[in-house]
Image (cartoon, rainbow, N blue to C red; front, side):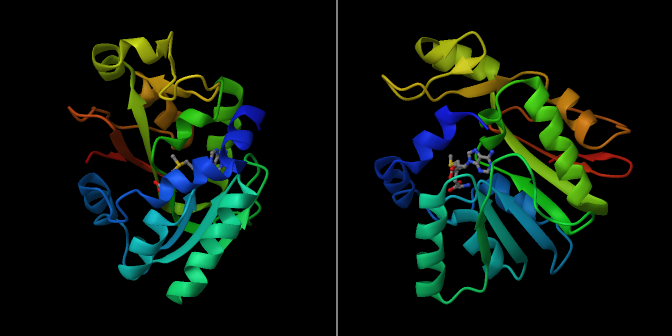
Length: 214
Ligand SMILES: C[S@@+](CC[C@H](N)C(=O)[O-])C[C@H]1O[C@@H](n2cnc3c(N)ncnc32)[C@H](O)[C@@H]1O
């Protein structure tokens, strides 16, 4: 796992920033969650301070949250205990999913966290892990930054496909314009693929046979 990412998210001030985020699911996240089977067991990757995990738990899903940052997991466990949620939260190495095969109905990589898995090799390995822990007919959902949108709106924050939203910081998010290829790696074979008009792009991939467009 890249040190740039883990160092950033071990830093208290960067974790504090997440506290101020609107805790509600975004509209597109609500739409995606509407496709999850009732009572689904969900792996929330990059759970942060539990924004999605708490909301999904409120919707009746069983959620397991994992994050690369020990600081984040310490804090989200405290929040979870204070709110009396029954959610398991774990920190891990950022690469290897420590769960048996076919453990989850749904795997989420929301809030553009896929863009923090730098380089093709890591993304390939990671998506294979996601596929391994998904049940047959399970769903993988991820969101990414859209390269063309960033180019139009934040050209000064781009260096090639690297998006640097924070001034004077090394952390960046990889931007995507060919996420269909990522879906193919996560869930072959693919029957169709089409982007939404507005970023962030949300996709659901079915492990077995097809892509469901949102
Ligand atoms: C932008 S925050 C999003 C947090 C949360 N999903 C939300 O929307 O409020 C990204 C989170 O992903 C975590 N992260 C980064 N790389 C990760 C990885 N490889 N595996 C799991 N978590 C990761 C960070 O520590 C951070 O908590």
